Image (tube, rainbow over all chains, first blue to last red; front, side, top):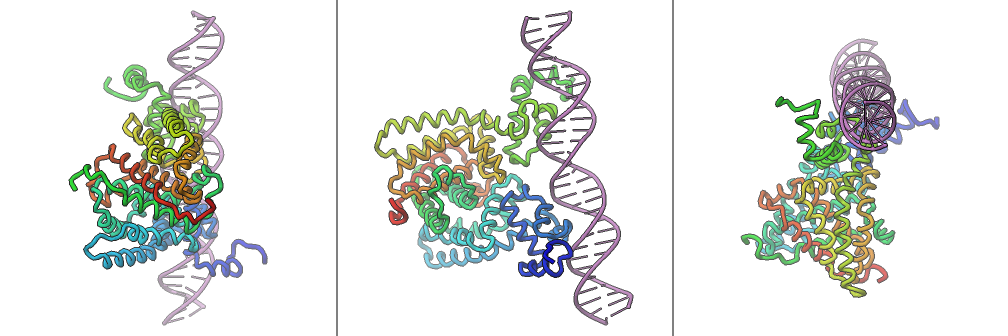
Length: 230
Length: 230
DNA sequence: GACTGATTAAATCAAGTGATTGATTTTTTC
DNA sequence: GAAAAAATCAATCACTTGATTTAATCAGTC
């Protein structure tokens, strides 16, 4: 009776049903393992084992491995995109034809992402997102791309309007810094922590706060004014 | 006669000898393929094929795949570390007990890396370094770590001295931004370029320049002063 | 109580992985 | 020019990968 394992109808199924059906179990297990070992590093077999389902189930529900990844992204990104869009739209409306505030735009884009770190599975997905955004496999990056593209363009456009002091080229490179900073913070495998000793432990609001301060200052820094046409 | 291929003693060997011996050929081919497909994404077979050597050669010269990666890092990082150390030491000596300039410290650390993008194979290695620094496999990250650790600690210590206005926690998180920005810029798979259209084409000094401006402003931004003990 | 469509199970495929072997060739050294 | 060392070769090992196939099971409905 105390045995877990096959014939999962009474015991295992009940505790599993709390989490969800097989499909949900797969999604959650995959999310955890992708976060831990990366997309290519986590095999379907390991995922199936963790989800306690048969090897064929994944192809039944998601067709292929990439479909599984896509499903994870859709599950997590959709609500975040909604929040981002709302906040960006609010800023847009508020600023009208004027130049919006840099830090407001940044916060509208970043906060919804970092905040979700605390949600159930949020930390795992944050890491997946970060890892996949620099994955060497174009197909993987495409998944990230498809998920974020629309809102990212909105964000970029608004941020551009908030930075009239920069040329396009300057703006371009500084955006690298934004994405890089976000990406690195979401990845976090403890390298910086090591270099500094264990003084930087309190992952929480401070991370978001410092990220925003840093990026705002970086974007607000005056440009050469002599680089390109503007 | 015009055939390339096996029995590589006359033709192929001569043109290969210009590049170097088999060992060097392997290193260069591996560097290119690691940069393109990542460490785990590039198989030894594909590397061997590109280097036109036998499958066993790699184990003969480098023992295992990780040994090959290590060799690449040693080949590229050693001279860069030397330059970084010299420049950091120069700043240290110059500033004495006072607080060094933030942008000088940053430049001493970053310029030697970015500059090498233009050198032979530099672009490839830059990408390898960036990818491996966030690789999910701890063994891969360890290679990066071992290569950069000593100098990174030196850099961190000096930068810390240049930022007395920050608490440890603030400094910690802002360092994330530095590494992230560098990492993302060195990775570059064209995501930002797409979002902005093709206006940001001129990869060159502007990248370094904007990176430095951005990071300097970010580090110099005042801290709360109310976060931790300082 | 059989039928139907959805789900799960077990077994297996073809391809690719890093690594190793033992023999052979090439180069060096005396 | 023989002995020793360095380098190269073809063949293969044991294993993992994503994907597929075929058969069994289950619910719900008429």
